Amino acid sequence: MSYGARLIAIGPAYRSKMLCSEVFVAGRDIDAVQADLVVDDLAALQIIDASIDTVSTTTTASFHGFAESKVRYRDVIGCALAADAMTPSSSEINTRPAKAPSSSMKDTRPVEPLKSSSVDNPQLAAVLDAVFSEPDPEHLRRTRAVVILHEGRIVAER
Image (cartoon, rainbow, N blue to C red; front, side):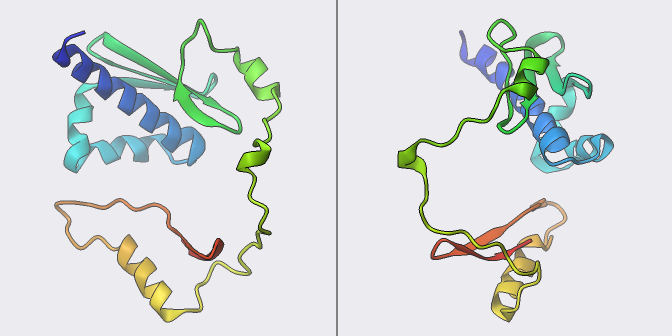
């Protein structure tokens, strides 16, 4: 496959994956997600045709009918490129139990949830405020979430 053909295939795959994650994982409004494409580096994605199927929890994108990419949302694991011949039906996906991590992947440290969503440390609060600020309207950060860990424990999140 030529460099140009590979490059053309990346756009639909990226747009389809982004739409799936934004709508089905993050729960964002479809119109708000589409509106994000008019700014900065994402504007090039406007030329890629895309559709969202909320019933089958799939997104499909193509470059004028070429290089079609389909992404499917799966409970527990999120969104991934779909290979229909190798992908189970949605009824199989939704009833399949989640796999437990292998014993070598388990973290044995106890995890304590945050007692509140507020940050008591003014320095951490200032960092969070700075990360979510938009100082340059020409180059938006579009930060949606931040988690700060210290020694394996969550000390701040927004």
